[in-house]
Structures are given as C-alpha cells and as structure tokens.
Image (cartoon, rainbow, N blue to C red; front, side):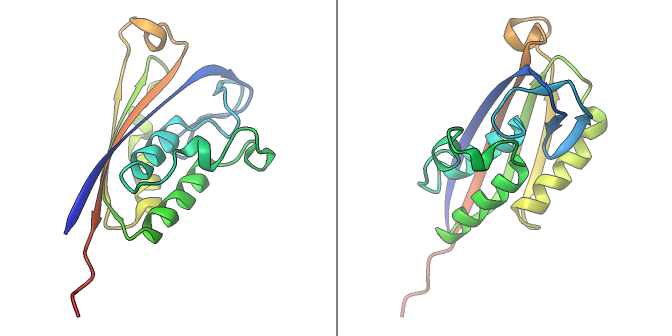
Length: 164
C-alpha cells in the first residue's frame, strides 16, 4: 500500500450576506456568512485542497474558478464530493482527515458532530474524520473576529494493482 499526506488551508472574511456554512452545516441562517464566490465553506475548501495535493491534482481554485459563474453560490460540500470522485479516479481512497477551524465566533462545539458526519458521508464511510475548533484568543485577523481560517490534513491510500 502507498500512502500520501496532504495539507489544505483556507481563510474567508466575515461579511457575506448569506448563511454561515462550515463543514456543510448552516451555523447561522443569514446575514453572518463568509465572503466568497461559492457558499464560502472554508472547511470544505481546506479539506478539498488537502485531498487534491497528494493525488497530484490541481488546487480547488483551479478546478472550480471564481471566474466561472457555474460556481456562484455553489455548495462547497458538493464541490468536495466532485473532488473525492476525481481523487478516487486517480486510484486513491481517503484514509482520514483531520480539521482545525480557527474562529473567534460563533461557538462551534454544538455543530462538530454534524460537520464530521457530513464530511465522512462525502469522503466515504471508511474515512475517519476529526474536526476541532480553536479560538484566536484576540490575536490576529481571526482573533479580532474578522474571519475564519481552516487547516486540514488528509491521508490518501492506494493499493497497487496485483502483478500478473
């Protein structure tokens, strides 16, 4: 078996007019969203890039550019589903994903289980998913409550084809 590890990162500012969506979960219904071309789900974006890199595929912005109106207000969880299909087509499966969400507000603990389940559903039932919230403690852009930053690490597994 061959394994590869990928790192994904995404950051979005508050100020979007739509809902705040993280990990496919609507945290706040409207008026408190993140700014972005799609639904600005920074969790889904970071996880997507963590999968694309070790599979040798282009990054999320190259695959789904903001200049393409087809992705305006798109569900980032659905874009992640497309990424998983591309990764699988390259012969890789997701072993696990570990996510850290850095947000001063709102409280995310009540939503972690739903985020983990959404991600696991998209990544495949064998994938282990961990999502952890952290606060900026008043330091920097996130600490001042200006936005949300997310890091994700993914392990991809590939089993070589048997020799003839």
